[in-house]
Amino acid sequence: MFKDFDKSILPNLNIMKYDAFIGIDVSKEKLDFVVISNGVMLFHMVVTNNEKGIKQFFKCLDDQLNTDSCCLFCLEHTGIYCFPFLSFSVHKNLSVWLEAATKINAFHGAFRDKNDKVDALRIAEYAAAKSQIAHLWEPERKIIQRLKSMITLRDRLIKAKNSLAVACKEEEFYTDKQWHKEHQERVKPILDQITKQTRDIERTIKEAIDQDDQLSQLYQLASSVKGVGLIVAVNIIIVSNEFKSIREPKKMACHCGVVPFNQQSGKSLKTRSRVSKKANKKVKSLLNLAARSAVASKGEMQEYYFRKVAEGKNKMSVLNAIRNKIIHRVFACVRDGRKYDNNYIHKLA
Image (tube, rainbow, N blue to C red; front, side, top):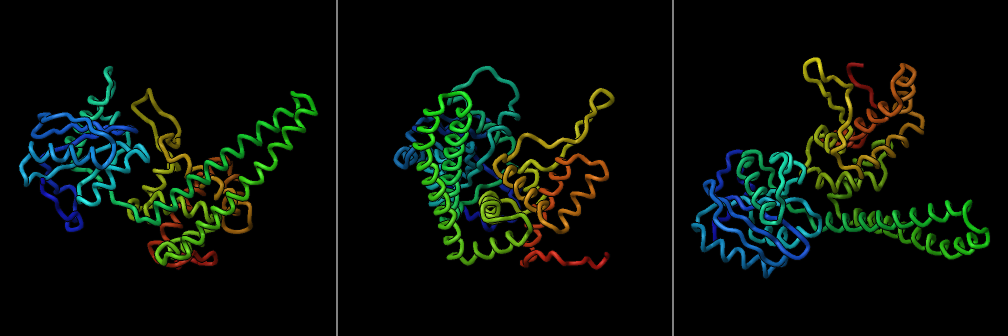
């Protein structure tokens, strides 16, 4: 088997030297592997997306590479379809780079042909060109995976509830009154059951957090910031992988799409700062709710909001600034290991 190594002893990922780069195109039923070494494609292989298929690929890889070869595996983030390979990589201590598809596509620019083999080749080429900035994937703890699963189920239930409720509400003015009443009677118990299940999931999430010392501490620190409730705090913890994958508030703010960017080039292009659409829209939406909650209650955030609006600032721009403040405060609390103090007065004030 090619050389395994302990990633924990490497303080700087940029010093890593890889002998081969493996691009993986992931789909529901199969995996396409393309192996590149010294700028040359060694081989392409298609296997089933399970442990048996992955072992077949590694057997073939052993025959093609030296036993001391160090490999970088790169694949796009495709949700649960990545789990078989990621689970296998944990046991083998592989170097895995889980990259966003948008970055890989942007690197290659416009292209006409597209199939699974070509996609795997482009991923391998991207890994070879960008290996110096590769951010190696870190496995999540089981409790984080469990929380992510419950949050996903909760989101699906809320989406289903909203879909039923809105459709039933809209037909009130366009269908027969008796029909509408019958529909309401049929839908109401379903909505009540979804509400009950949603609350049960939230209660289970809180219990799971309380039973884990590390998670419990992170939750208490994050939720001490005004506007941050259970769901917002849990989503921030999940996205940042317990503040290990994303350690800096600026990176988190950029990931959530609350950082405005300038677009300026010479005299022909100059626009006002805008937030990017390339963001985690789910967490961005939750942060928007957190900002509105913070503004709704008396305190520093509310005073800041009204002061900026009175100065002529756009209301949504001010809310976006508050979302940014919430992220920075959460990360500051985690960094310092203490809850947010609403009555804190800075020494320079």
